[in-house]
Amino acid sequence: MKVLHIDSNHPLLELGLEKLGCTNHQDYTSNKEAIESKIHLYDGIVIRSRFKIDKQFLDKASQLKFIARVGAGLESIDIDYAEKKGVYLISAPEGNRNAVGEHALGMLLSLFNKIKQADAQIRKGKWLREENRGLELDGKTVGLIGYGNMGKSFAKKLRGFDVEVLCYDIKENVSDENCRQTTLTEIQEKADVLSIHTPYNELSDKMINREMISLFKKPFYLINTARGSAVVTDHLVEGLLSGKILGACLDVLEYEKGSFENLFENKSFPPAFDYLIHSEQVLLSPHVAGWTVESKEKLAQTCVDKVAAKFYNIYANPNQQIQQTEDVGKVTGIGGVFFKTKDVEKTKAWYQKHLGFATDDYGSTFWWNDLEHKAATTQWSPFKQESNYFEPSKKDFMLNYRVSNLDNLLIELEKEGVTLIDKPEEFSYGKFAWILDLDGNKIELWEPIDKAFQ
Image (cartoon, rainbow, N blue to C red; front, top):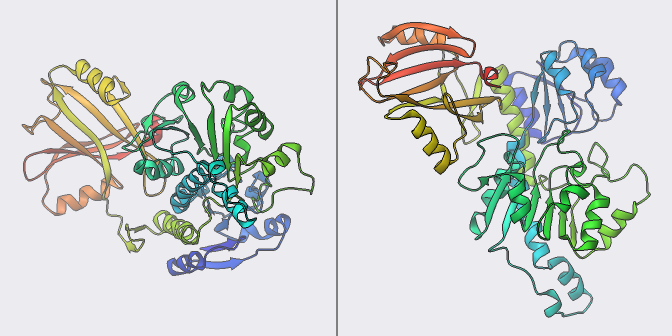
């Protein structure tokens, strides 16, 4: 494939694509119109944020197979139109999530301990101890809005502190050992610190505004390492002046250009920004939370790995080394856990009450992302004791495994002497087949269509 790079990145990105067999071309200076005039020659394009990929651009890109953005979000791309045209979209939040988590924690601890102002005072010959008495994070409640790659990373960094970590997310069942998912109302009631970890979209745009701020029950600190558009700066300053917001750690600002490379379109400073830069309650950084030496390499490698998995059937192992696998069909994850119980409804109610399962008629569905960063599901389902679905197994449980290519896998299993139970079946949500393992456990094999669950 021919790939056009319109932004510079870590050299291993081009090297990795070259090893896959791609031909790399660079154009870091031409304007959008010039790029559009030749994009029809390319199968892939690698971008950061130099300009937007809109409908006009995509119509010109007649043979484009993928767009790889070396960053966490895809807001610079018309996602719906690109997907409609069959263009595979790649982002790399896995590449800089650790950097963002560390940066958010570093900013918060610096603000709590007044490190910036203390350093500046000492350099001026002032040794002011009482004026620089800090706060401890222990005992505080930290609320996160958005619990994807970045939110999870920050929550993991907070494990070393005696804090309660709560998150609010539009997706269900995102809780883990580091954070409890809850309502926005509970966060507004309890949070001492609020940290934003949302992508840019209609829901997050201007989300932290006067009304939202007023609903918090006690004064709080604000961290924003996500997108500047999430916070209305004028309303933030109002909160700082009134004491409703005790301080702010801002890696991003709503005044940034779309490329994130410069702060202002012109040299005029809005009054709210003038307040921020003179306030000792505010800590600022230039959109660099995910901008580390290590993340630059990880972002590039993540994009290479995703191109390799999608177009060359090569998958990365945990050590970032890739291995070729023939697509004969293989297990890609656990698709379901099924077990018998004396009372299905009581069992579902117990798991809902004590473990937070979101249950329905079938049990509970857990969402996650596969190697290609596509949404995938694992099903949890209790069955009645008298159910014969697990037969001929005599066990009270059955596991369902997700597979990448069921037809090919069944051919290979037959060659290896594995007996198929019944005939394969196909439904709107995927293909199914059943086998027994060495211990007589019934195994359900599922090639899913996860979109059927949405």
